[in-house]
Image 1: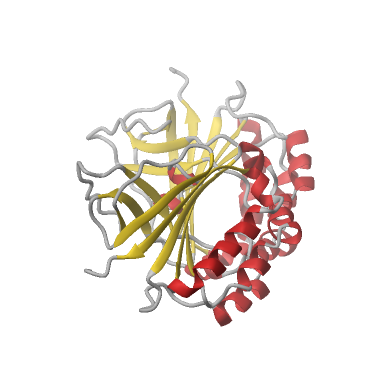
Image 2: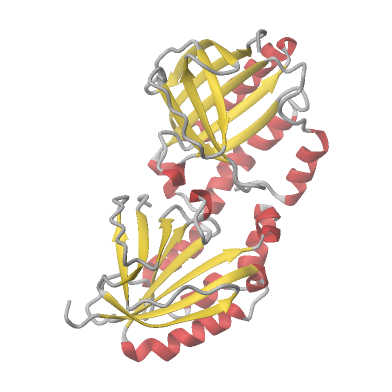
Length: 186
Length: 186
């Protein structure tokens, strides 16, 4: 897994029009008309930016080799032509989560909350990329970016609903749900 | 585990006198008279710095709850009065390592290389703190800092010798071994 720093900027620029920003748990984020997804470490901040969220792609932290093979066999890449809808879901987990040992976190994540198995049911309709922010000292521990076709929107809603109804989710102390559509003018 | 950014600077300043810098695998680091250990994100770089290595303390990535309890029962804190000797061992692992899934890395790390079990034999003589650099895009994936009393120096040499004679170590593509002593004038 190549390390790619990514910044998601809410402001007046970017390829994605923001449809709604929902504070699911804890503080939300200011409203903004557009979302820009900036790959690489170039800092192109503008005075019109309302917020900028930082993360970096990294190696998988919980997946077994078998689970990863299952995912890779069916998952789709980002940037599909038909995937004109997307969601950015920034999450911060509690100190109690980070104080758990690896085997305890894994057991909650998969054996008890079925994070991977549930996500697998929604492939290949939903494409996904995870960005880590915790080691960067960023505002959120995770920024997950999802892309899907318009007709998969309600399917995607079901996925996030199920993931929020798990033991793992009790360790989430802040979550924002940002829905966007690709700007047809771009 | 609190997130503490730490920078290790080789140059003309700092509480530790550098005794030797050995390139164990791959490129070494320039020689310097002193090592400074700077906690926090303040950047106080000086023209006399030869190098600055960045990392951040983070949660444990492989330890089970049982292993962590064993370690915590016997490990000592940094900063002991008698621990006047220290080692900084920066390591970068190969892409092949980072491409492995979590269960594969864990199996190599502990079930086959006995990283934790071996380290445990050297507690409480050797105190240790691990810093992660990979997510920061730093020069090394890991910076491990060890402190021990002078009489534990050969014991510490044995520990690093044993850890280098493992399957896990075949995934190390760069390692430098920096030995320092606390400056008696400080």
